[in-house]
Amino acid sequence: MGDEKPVDEVATLHGLGRQESEDWQRSQPRTITPEQWARFERNIGEIFEALGMEMDTPGTERTPARFLKALFDATEGYEGDPKLVTAFPTECRGGPDCHLSQVVEGPIPYYSLCEHHAFPFFGHAYVGYIAHENIIGISKLTRLVRLFARRFSVQERMGVQITETLQGILEAHGVAVYLDGTHLCTQMRGVRETDSVTRTTFWRGHYAEEPELRAEFLRICEMRSTRS
Image (cartoon, rainbow, N blue to C red):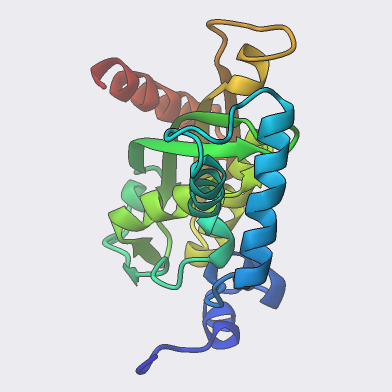
């Protein structure tokens, strides 16, 4: 581990409680024993066969193992990301830049699994903040989005987690998050929608207080969405 600080110390430095810090910086990998893994594969194979899949063809005999491995990889966000926090002193030197100037990153593609049906939902995230004492490495904003996306979740919770974690890390003047999402649980089952997109917004600090900042953030997101 070298000179890396323990979770509790990092949490204290960034104003986060123990539980909140563990949510994004948990460094202990999930452990599944070989016996558990074999049992899970058998159970998955039994379910697939009951639903109609022929399990003894060259293309399907390893499907339960591939499915389980893909599901494990898609939910790696539960293991946290100890490389997430790379904060630097703010570039603000006074004046309006310290209260109005935004850092906006996006579109950040994400893929997640709905906890209600374990079907995928996916889309783009836009993350903005108004720096106070610190700024964060730009790549860490992508890490932050994908940390919470790679779990069983719902879009609303994912947005709150991104917003509150970034606010806690930076103690920024404001944080804004915009998510759009296509949900296969509404397209492959149920009402079977074909074109709907779910959009959610989250505001903290100056963004919550000033409509002009919210409007500017959304305009930036719209411009980036048009270009992508």
